[in-house]
Image 1 (cartoon, rainbow, N blue to C red):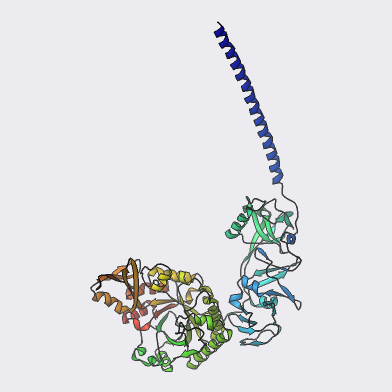
Image 2: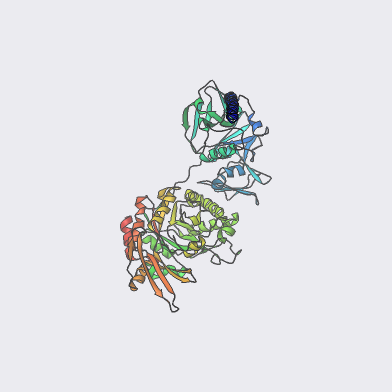
Length: 624
């Protein structure tokens, strides 16, 4: 009985303990729910407070840490690293700012070491020194009051001169901001449609107000590019604001020059102000009878002008382009500091008379043996550029050229700007002398990314794209891709044309055709392939493989024939010989691109490597 009573006592005690624990757990749960409710209430209250817009007004200059000086406002930014200057009561813009927005290269070329400014437009070449009105090599009249200043090595230009000549327009606002716009671009504007609106520094209603706006005020809509938005969102990480609703805002600029964000719902009446140009009217592009069928002629010396092969008239050819002009010493690739800018001239009046008698124009080539020193040493020097230009024009007029084709191929990333400046300066003088201005260029490929094809197309009449050398051993090694490949596959040629059409008028483009086949020889030594290559004429390339009893197989993908065979050498190694072979069929496929893309015509490199069948095919396709 005592044992049973003891068990009952323990049971009652455990039950009481369990009940007590239940009360404790219930109390904890109640307290937890109460705390969560209170916390939620305060979060709700605080969130509602945060949603209330920030109505604090901050001075725009103070927010940007700007002084009371005049600042340039351009696009969607205040420029605080380039300052305008008031000189003789007229506002002047610094050349570094003009350079930054893309105006230095195409129009203004400043050489601080010799304090010389060169101005080029479609009709003018002007050289002028600062702080006076002395001008030389001046082919047009310049306003006598045009004076620019050189202050601490920086050139400053009067706005009146720039606005009358280039596509810029400026306005000094009441807030002392110089707002600069490109006039050749369309501008979008909108009106404020509420009684009170605000521009905030950032697209967040907690960002401070930088300007109060009123009904019907006109605002300039600024670009919120993906790059701009990404930069803004990256900055959010270090910001006290969250740009969760930035899509509801529009980036604008006021007539005072203030830049900021406004709720899009407060805007309406969006419209476009169409761009216009202040550029002096460019002399019309000089053209020949198109389609053009140009024969590039590799003339190595004066005597070669009079050989029998140079008196053969190829059917359909309407322009001869002999290699007549070269930079003296440029063949000495490893002998720097020897170039003087002197041109060697092997032009022939008899050759020109023969061409004219057979209905052909003559556009001689100026070339450089692919020597980078030509651009680095000669074209970088203003006096030497003038020297080259004067020689070119004098020779052209003396021999009565119809045009000139520039074939300077030894440019690189470091000297490309000198080459471009030479082309700009030559442009108005060629037009003044009624000479058709053309240039041979490489394709817009990855190993020539520094080429500015759009700028080249802007200043010349015709651009002959050398749409070949798709695979070359030296270039392949440079790209760490030494795989033998076609010289000018149809897709490679087509893409070259498309790339150029994106940056220039298709009617300027001359399609350069290869009248040669590149044969590859590949041997393997210690597991590494060794490459040799040989360029041969069209007929030789076909015969080479047929004589070896190797069939030519057509490839629709490459747009050419392909052939391959293996030879066992005396030492037991194997040599693979292969080529993508140019024929009349492959060249016709490329020539048809002239009509597919509305091009100016073709040019073939080089004349002596073609066959009669090739000339007849081009005459038939082009209708020349």
